[in-house]
Image (cartoon, rainbow, N blue to C red; front, side):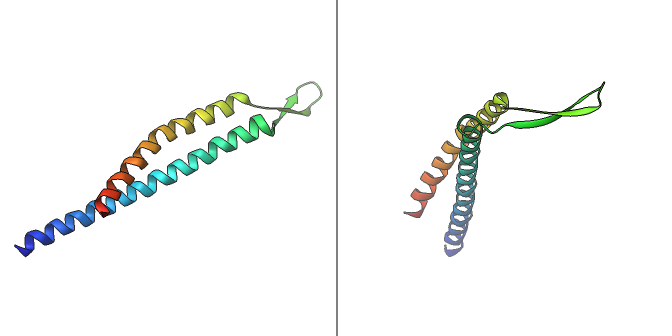
Length: 104
């Protein structure tokens, strides 16, 4: 009889650890993707950070620096990170809800 209780306790502990790890990973993904979205928004649309590149002109062999704001790259980063948020937020919430129920 006690062996059965020990197995149930062990299963509960393993399941709790798995949920805790899932919760931590989900929260980390949410925080990092939110920070990357804010970085892309601030850098591109608010601060206007330019990407500079050098272009070589064949006849004169001089390199010219061309700077411009890359809106397409910012949109790409925002879309990637919003997709990550759409995945991570429900995952974090479900793991938190299960973990909270298990603790009670």
